[in-house]
Length: 302
Ligand SMILES: NC(=O)c1ccc[n+]([C@@H]2O[C@H](COP(=O)([O-])OP(=O)(O)OC[C@H]3O[C@@H](n4cnc5c(N)ncnc54)[C@H](OP(=O)(O)O)[C@@H]3O)[C@@H](O)[C@H]2O)c1
Image 1 (spheres, helix red, strand yellow):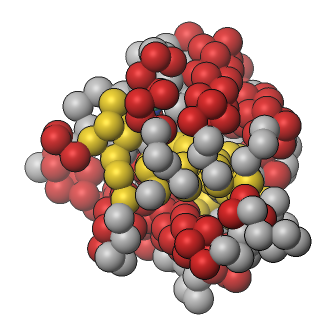
Image 2 (tube, rainbow, N blue to C red):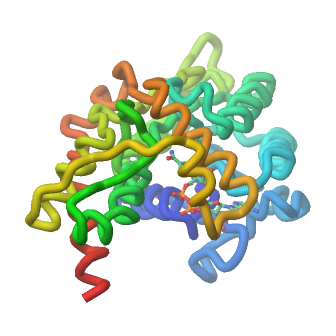
């Protein structure tokens, strides 16, 4: 049996839907309501929920629960690794962070979790997910009103660009890896099945799922121009100005947001290729997603 955690989230929900659409027997794990009667309660903040949630699970799709301070995330993820070990889960697939994000503040919890998984007795596959296309789309949407009024898009990105990927593409990779891991266990092809010398296709693998398309301030200004039907120029703003303008965020989010801006400006978030195209013939075009997000936000304001 495959269990997907975090199914009320957008990534976990898409992975669960994809597995079920492919005809697989996938069970939902959720920290709260989930999808009703078919969901198992799997709240990483309440480790006592994890033993019953993981009972009888062969393949666990462990979706990171990273929206919190580092100490909270480490406690959550440590609890998952211990519970999966105790329950005898055979293969854990963890949604981590791409290599280009190594210097982001959010990398700490992901790399710590990868290290705990590497020490565990079960098979592991690490999906090092690239940053979501929603990040630049959100920046463009935030700048849409000013761009519409004055033809200028401001953002603290310098000349840097970031490689991003559609969340649905990351979900599609997770679906395929989980289904194949389950099939390998069922056929005895996986090491965790006990067959001597056997190894499943994804056992011990770390996949770098960097986006293949990079966008920066200029590309976002072009997307805004397309969505607004008027010329838009990009004007970079200093990090200090961006920090002073941050509002409405949890304290930990402010740190992660500034870290993302710093990394983009330093040119560190432009990927150098990876495994995405080994799984997907044609990753979804990011620029189109940004334009569509801005257009839908503008339509909602009318
Ligand atoms: N690659 C990127 O650009 C990027 C950006 C932001 C975040 N992330 C990471 O990717 C994860 C999934 O992204 P998403 O788009 O699905 O985020 P999302 O839609 O905001 O969902 C948040 C996720 O956190 C889970 N969660 C929160 N508290 C939990 C708890 N106590 N126990 C178990 N799960 C808990 C939720 O699961 P429940 O259904 O159990 O509540 C849900 O799956 C995030 O949680 C974050 O770690 C990646």
